[in-house]
Image 1 (spheres, rainbow, N blue to C red):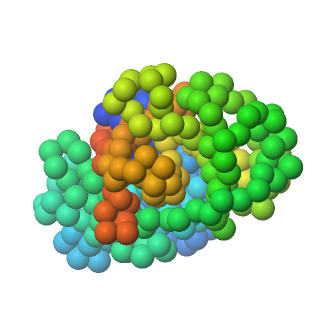
Image 2 (cartoon, rainbow, N blue to C red; image 1 turned 30 degrees about the vertical axis):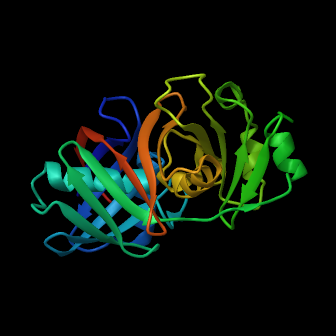
Length: 267
């Protein structure tokens, strides 16, 4: 089995979010898939099974579990299928746990069409407050997967030092913190974020696409604009063009392949 490392949401090596990509004739045993993902220790590793010429079934594994939706590993998979010349058409459809997803290429940019996920206002849990160090908070939202905490500034997001052990105790998969960019950084950027999922082996995800399925409709309502630019300000950083279109979210970004390897043993 060949395994590629593709960095998503960037066009530079050692930036963005690394993903493992494995193209398989049939999906491997779940235990082996999970062991491969844990061995690679990327935020997600994608496994692709061909259905038709530009139609694939995709599954994503974190170091600890199978993930219901992953943006960066889908972007990585689409990039690799085109880069390797495996797919000739400009649109790829992926069947997934979250329904059909599409990727469309335009030169060096790839646009993912993903579900738009509405999050509801929520009270701040005491444990989450402790996990974030009792920092000033503008608002809190949640769904059944994630808490989204809006902080008052880009600086507050950048300087946050969360307690991962306490985040892992929360009854959710992950926590995202975000803030409006009010002239603190490049004026081209509308909002910033960081993402934490220590419960599934991802203390801080460098750039999270599925978080932007929630952040995009949230900031679209707040800013009253459908198209925005987003920057995830992790140590590696990543850039996305995001939009709300027909009750869906589009994520437009770049990717770069940085490594290729081969699984020598499954025992």
